[in-house]
Length: 477
Image (cartoon, rainbow, N blue to C red; front, side, top):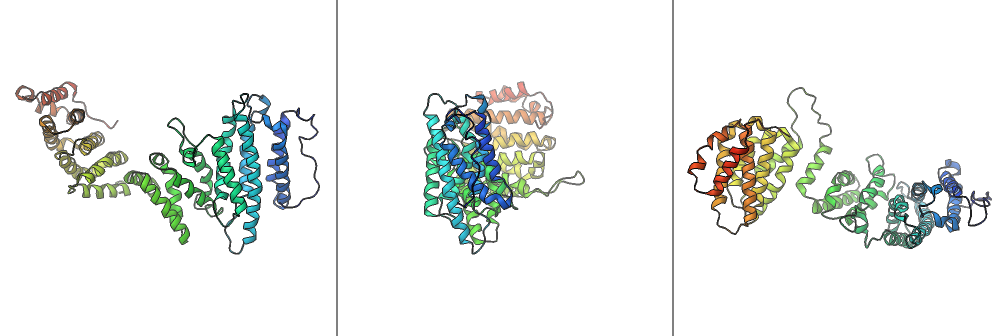
């Protein structure tokens, strides 16, 4: 630490008898420590060194045992203040912007990190003691503002990097291990995505802390941030990663797009992990808003074609001739998401969509019938979003749906009855929507079939269409 001259006693000393200080003195003490970290640049080095010593003494004090009790009204707001102190400590020990020939600065950062790690160990041991005490039920609430900053610090300094030393790595590793112990997590992955289904995990919190340092203007200010992001990302896999796609994709693209080879490789590793753990086509759907920021329709003329249009066109082009069932299922599984994304603009693709839908409804897909079920889901969305253009396609869609219903009714394969019922249900719902889009014409065309139909399943489907169809135009809701 940097040397500093004589200074006044910490503000909590002498405020009362040992072990019986006024509770407000704790708040004043931590507030002064924060003030020392935020001091003027010319005095900041000495002030921060003094703040570290003051904080170490404060954490040793018996009064601090009450920090995580949560029962004293005068301690209200202390968890948030401790969170601010943790952030200040992490910033104090963070490596500066990368510059060549600054090995002396790296050793200084490692020294600071080792000192800060000891303080975090002290603080976490206080939490552990409170957790094991029956009189401290509020330790989880008090710990919440601390876990994010402490995690980011621990990962920053526990990995082998130019700014770390064997000593700083060791104590930072101890901080991470104790943090997992205190939060009752068996692994870093469990800490991030939650140990069970009822627990949210802290991945969102961590990404929120890293976000200010992961935009195009700031991501190189702290050379550790990209490594913390990458290391943390690799710990979260499917199915948990999908819900965080909007948070993790932009930084990964930013890092991979850098001119430095090292950063390109790091970014590609991040993107590769995302592709392996998030459905690729759905990943593209979340990427489109980023790519299309400049494309804003102003109401004059036709709306511009977007990347989503181009990708859907490409998918449909590959879907139409595809005969391999595995690929057909994969394409069909993702098709509804694209229709939802485009909404009414799906009309641009109606001709090709019509051919794909009819073609896929004709082909048996195996016992689970995943492709045909997803195609029926797609057809329902198409009918809802593009209903004004449906009436001219009435006959061809009606024939395809009736053929599907008849095929299912006569199906003697190993397809489970539950799957057959699901197909009949979805096909019937499509007929009802089709009738509404065509102002009741389907009901009229089907009027004579129930009297001549010998199959009860087919007859039941048609009677249901006649009963539930009201002839009202379909809408997009």
